[in-house]
Image 1 (cartoon, rainbow, N blue to C red):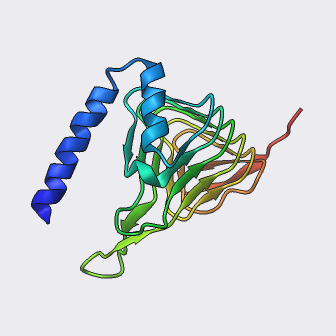
Image 2: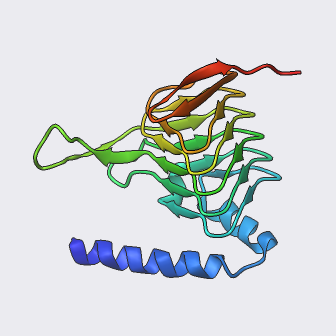
Length: 170
């Protein structure tokens, strides 16, 4: 099993390296093929890594910036990372939908879906953990670690992220 996992990792790293060499129009065509959903007008910048792309949905007119990481689960087939429409994801954001149960010595796999609502903005180098829902229009400050749901139209920040204020829309 370990050999198969290592082979899978090696092959996917090579394929992601090749995708990073392609122009954006070809990259978009590939993302339409490999992702569960890739919405019209969306962009995934170079250096982004998506493990298990069939478990990732990206809405329309969404920007995933350079160096982001999206890690879904291999063992939990119903778990996905779902990013809505008109979402801005800054550089080096990590979406971690899979993890391990620290309460047990053998660290069994755990996983739960991550959902990002429409018009949300996630700041650079933020980490979004499993089972989190980020509400519509919410803003996650740069460097935040989001461990719990974020209400719609709020600004959160910190480690762990906490509500800082309500977002005023003009």
